[in-house]
Amino acid sequence: MTTAKDLFIIAMDLKQSVGQGDLSLALAGAELIDLIGAGAVAVDGDRIVPGGQPTLDDRFMGEAAAEFTRQAPYERIEDWLWRRGRDLSAAYQAALEENGELKPQRSGRLSFGSERVEAVDTPARRRAADRWKEKEPVLAALASVVGIDERSDDEPGLDDEAVTTVLAAVHDAVMELEAVRQRRTIENAAFANLWRGP
Image (cartoon, rainbow, N blue to C red; front, top):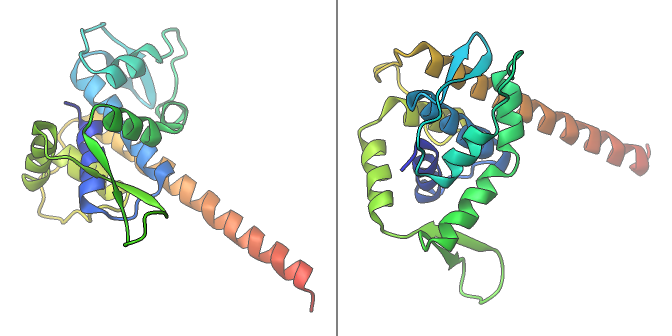
């Protein structure tokens, strides 16, 4: 069980509207934090420095560990988040559906329309819920970055500098993505007004 998987399950359970791009960046950050904890990588400034090669029993963690640049100059954290995060949310959803950990849930009474998914009651889901209830600092911080929950000032902080650096990079990447969205909205509105005329 990984922080990324826990974060994905919490996002499903709370049924809050989270942008797929935002969630994908946070999932990549969660993977990186777990890999730091496993000793697979370290953080030097804003760069990811590969470490040992521990045995990773999670498919996504193994894929993430295989993607690190192993020669100096090492990759910047933010660059890796964008590269690793591409469509990561969809990949987690597909894997959890394949494993029977997510099931389709149709909204409304009609048999067609948008299909949503919900987490099945599994030990993994209960573990994610326990971490969430305990306000585990890393999980809470990642959830806050994507807007699932706002952190309060009295919650325990993070005492690991590398983890704090990764969380800051995830936050910056999510803010950058939001700025791109806003710019596109403004450009699209301006284009529509141009065609509408005076």
